[in-house]
Image (cartoon, rainbow, N blue to C red; front, side, top):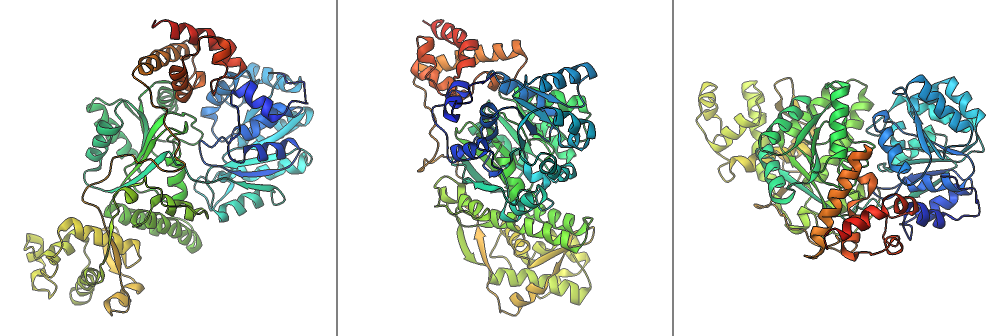
Length: 609
């Protein structure tokens, strides 16, 4: 899309190209700053409209915007999405034939592009740098900028080279964008990308349409199945697992239950990964079961849930992954099943990790923050926002708000566990896992208890006031608070320095008691993005529009959301426009989409009469 009239304002482009009447949050401030030639570091949550912050300046400024994107596998979909708006976009990467690369290079040099997508490793090539030197560059956009940070969770060494952009093109504005960064990560991004003098824009990290829920693990696949059948039947979603084996088994389990689920992990061949990713993006109601290798850069707006069957390693990772739900602003669920084995496994992985003491300490800090989020008795959303240095009111929509857990004095219970570990170690020179210690506390004369004469210990049977599940919760929280540690390949328990304060009665141990019943109802709250409720008349119209969109997307070989988002179709179904002029007033219907799809939409609306 050529935009020769440089007098156009960002607001003009927003309406004409993207079909929106107004900017959100600090978008307009960011865009005007970059249009004016300023550098920017932008932190904005997934679904907050980060891409507009460089796409609109690209269309207002002279030249081509060079977009650094870390995922070659998604460049085609990124390009399809902006081309559907009439924007002239293309990419250069290793998947293209030489003739195709030359055609893109020629279009770049002839000023026939608005956006050019490149992977960060391509900018290490002197050939690419010389090509860019010959063209006119409007700006550099560095997407997923947290990849430059070794403190962050998606470190990519190729991003370290991007500081060279400022050295070679000192007058070209740069905008670095990410959805996830603490103050420490933000500082590292600025330093490593030579953006210390850039203006920082930090939007609210709050995603009011996402309901955060963390449940105690109890047959997690069955718990997941219950979630899908009762709340998300037919919805698209992502299920994260820690291991490749768990990914495969969970995908097979869901498929056997009649739920369309596909695996995705680094152990699959490239063709299978690409095929599964394409199906997830282009078909309705598909669930992707994946390791964290999947998801960054995914722009599918109608992901209704993100579920974790294993504990994430950090709050940044958790926030980034859950943020892939509800990009369209409609109500969505972030669900995590969490148990004692998760804590034991993560602690063991840190102890066994490569790297120096500082690296392991950093990993431990990340895990401690994640455990604090899981064990909080307060609002999950407030805890998340506080982690990123922001403040918020209790949301009334997370599990701890809907069914507040109790806080109880677990000092005596903690002393019983720690005393048992101490006596096994000191009196018997033995170390055991949670199961054996709980059997001792409950006074169970199992074969293993009797074989080791553990029924003769003074702590045998002193813990009958709690049931086994509650004792596992005690163990989990003692580990979360650093009062127990795991040791060796058998993952047995040992005391820590802090344990001794509890045993001596010098430290009180408060614990969280999980609610008996987990909440499912969605409570509205101030600021929550409203769902467009469809009337009885509008609901079948919406389904007809979805069917038309699906057929059109299949015919064009693009994801359905590239045509129109669900939110746009819902508004069309509710307002029932009867002319192109009326259709043009719908949010998300820009000039190009109106010209390309308008008649098809009106025909579909009329087909039910």
